Length: 73
Image (cartoon, rainbow, N blue to C red; front, top):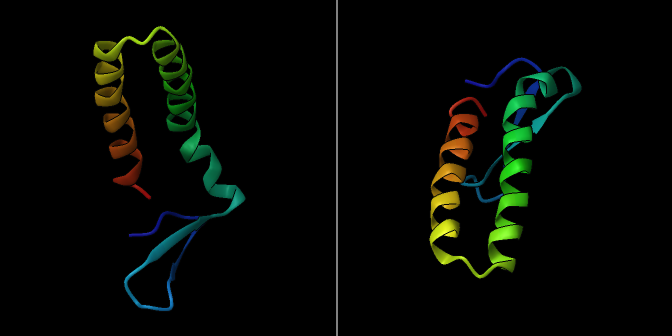
């Protein structure tokens, strides 16, 4: 299912699928985009501190955020 405002486009090989999001679908992405941005900053700080355990923990949270968005898009 493609959400309102999104457009599904198949690649030339028939396997690749790209979802182009129109302006009216952007509000749906809002929370996920903010969550990813927050995690990106945490990754930066953890990598600067060379904190591998924290990077692994952040990676798990990032996977959850990505998955929640990709259930819709």
